[in-house]
Amino acid sequence: MSEYLEPDTQWVKKEKRTAKPFVTISYQVGAYGRSVVSGLSEYFQKYENRKKNTWKVFDNNLVKKTVEDYDLPDSVLPYLAESTSSEIEDMIQSSLGLHPTRFALVYEMNQTILHLAESGYVIIVGRGGNMITRKLSKGFHVRLVGSLDHRVGYLMDYLKITGQEARKFIADEDRRRSGYFKKYFEQDINDPGLYDLMINVNRFSISDVIREIGSLVLKRDS
Image (cartoon, rainbow, N blue to C red):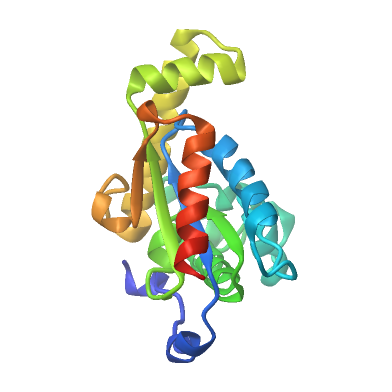
């Protein structure tokens, strides 16, 4: 990872004494992602023995949380999307004072993700969460994948779209996410070595995936 984007982890030694569990979820488009995240949150609420610890999901709301943490103007919201942009366009706009550089914004989001993970009992979706929090001992990092045909079929049913629309949506989103991961973390998002668990959703139902992840997380933290 670029040194500039490396979150401040000076407190990691202390974290080993106060570590709390958290999960990062990365998924290919159409690989049950949002359904699994929603179901996993419900699973934890039901089976987490320490009832005072409420698990929270941070997905698209990570953008809002970053804006709040760093008192950023709402005008930066489009630039905190999980995508890449033209370096020239970014440089021109930042030099005109329209917004901080995208690298600066990504760094601030990474800091927000890191501190959410430190607080524990959170499910962090996408945005390289597994890379940002990799030095924290209680993280459980998951990647959901599936064949193109399986994902197309799922999206056709889930979004009520045609097969052609589903294939285009998948191609665009997969390219956007892998590009973001490559640019800011210098890694291949599909490298299985970056995750504790990679699940092929072709072989499991949504409920099976939720139960597998949830039971492993709670067992590991018991």
